[in-house]
Amino acid sequence: MKTKQTIDDKKLFQRAILLGGLTVAAAAGYKFARAVDEQFIHLPKAVAGELLSFSSTTAGSLAYYVDQQQSGQPLLLLHSINAAASSFEMKPLFEYFGGRRPVYSLELPGFGFAERSAHRAYVPELYAQSIIEMISTQIGAQVDVVALSLSSEFAARAAVNRPDLFRSLTLISPTGFSGQMREFPGEWLYRFFSLPLLSQALFALLTRQDVIRYYLQQSFVGEVPASFINYAYAASHQPGARYAPLYFLSTQMFTPDALTSLYDRLTLPVTVLYDQDPNVSFAALPDFVAERPNWQAIRVQPSLGLPHWEQLDEVVSILDQVLAQT
Image (cartoon, rainbow, N blue to C red; front, side):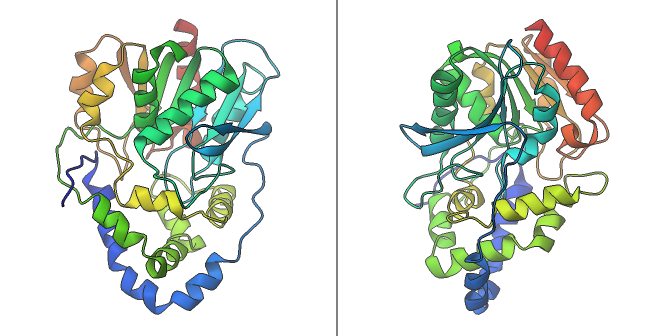
């Protein structure tokens, strides 16, 4: 049976279909890809904070970084979702706010130092619950949250379910604002991508260093820092690294109609930082924000999805003002 799903950007789905076309080549090079996949690389810490872990009720062992040099209102950072995601994506913000206030960066299920189980459904509810457990059991106080890309939907879902845990949301290049309803394959595409012969080979091709560089370059106006490429490569060469990204590629991590089912239900202060993004559409954002007094959208130019990497001074200036007002 076909499953209807909404994704906020047609290009993300088209990319998944394109990857499906690579499976023929992947199968042909299976032995090579398997050898590459099994050459696991040491994964260093993504940021300078203390690396801790806890056992969640739904996602197994989760890891997070924390800097508690200063007291004050805690800030939680949430990285995006992709084949090589980790807290490294939030490094500029972690380094800036570390020493200024308590700052945390959660490694989401299936990424970074979090557990990467093959026997888990990596779906929106899992990520929202992980965020809730992180705040309620590890931070223990109401938080300001900064989320990147698709994790904006997870943070919004968590805030809808437990508004008492959140003081404000800042969403960087958030998904869910295309304003379009589309039909997507859902579970059958996952079943196709997760075939043992194909999944390992396809993921090995996706996480070659030159491929990682190509996709990261789409999110940078200037050159991608070599440290970013190297860490993404290491993060994607860990045991079980392919399991969560397969759910992403099959579109199962996206929330159908996130605009009304998630974002429209938020009552806390929400700030959106955005500009251009080759993977995300913001077509519905201006009208949506104009009709909601608790929302504001600020364009950070020029940027292509990672403004906190290329326009850090402007981003932290905005965040300092936002966090001081909430």
